[in-house]
Image 1: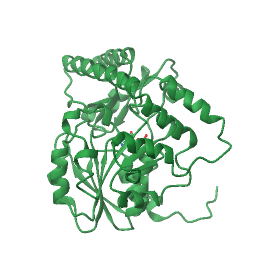
Image 2: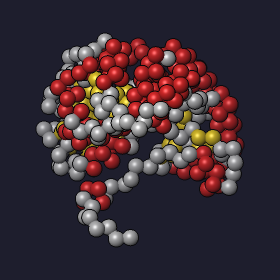
Image 3: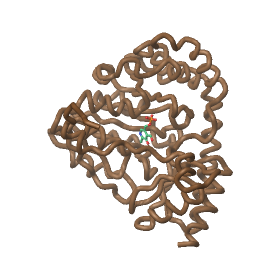
Image 4: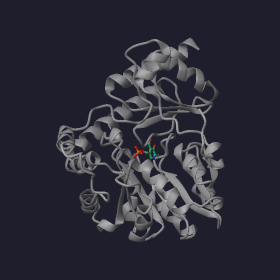
Length: 362
Ligand SMILES: Cc1ncc(COP(=O)(O)O)c(C=O)c1O
């Protein structure tokens, strides 16, 4: 095939984003059946019935474009957080909003600072803009905010901070984040990426109430993909002061949040008590799995999301492959560790026993 256009140098050198393998891919690759996927931090159950019903109903009108700005959904989110509607943006997943932030604020040569290891799209989107990613090593498994603040320079446009951090699961308090914000120029946009908010310990604080009113350069990103079980629909949102939201909205692809996602988001907010019950079930499973893994002799940081981080170091590759050949699909980070989503009780039991089998066979 001949490519007639010239690929931009920053894109030509860029790796494609590689999502976690799904169960069917692993089955085909290893000639097995009955695989389970614990690789992408999804919820193990289908969405709640009222959300499915809202999607069914909205599907009847998808011959029409949706409302580009998703006004009804933004209004509902604004009510939920007790902020004005101009303080809320929505995107095609929170990953869509992360990309919009780079499109809005990063010119070629600008710096984007983020702890590492963290969410894989931060370096990808930075490179997409021909920006320069500045990675700040974790302190053990945790984000080192002093080191992040020290890495911020006049050429820095954005700082990405995932809390809980993907994949290590550690979390930051809003008190520490406020202290960080006071040390960073107000010209730098700080994205507090809370994709796993609903699984986090609420006593660490809420950036929407603790940071947004004071800092015009902070944006809090959240998603319906994880706790709300809508990963396949692509719906995320951001909360910030109105001028920052206005800049982010300028780079939104037309109709990026589709009609089904808009209807599902509103229905999911209405279904909050049911969703909370599911989150509580997963949190109980998290406690059980962590205790079991520690009893089996594994070292792991306290998780704050719907996943655990097992720092297997150089054994990562063989343990990941051993699990996958036995039908348990997890997310490997070469020579660092594996990230394992908290699944249903049966899935968690299967992961634990398969891991013991794999390690015994090493
Ligand atoms: C830290 C973090 N941020 C953002 C996302 C993106 O989620 P979504 O685009 O589905 O909202 C993820 C997904 O895994 C994540 O781990």
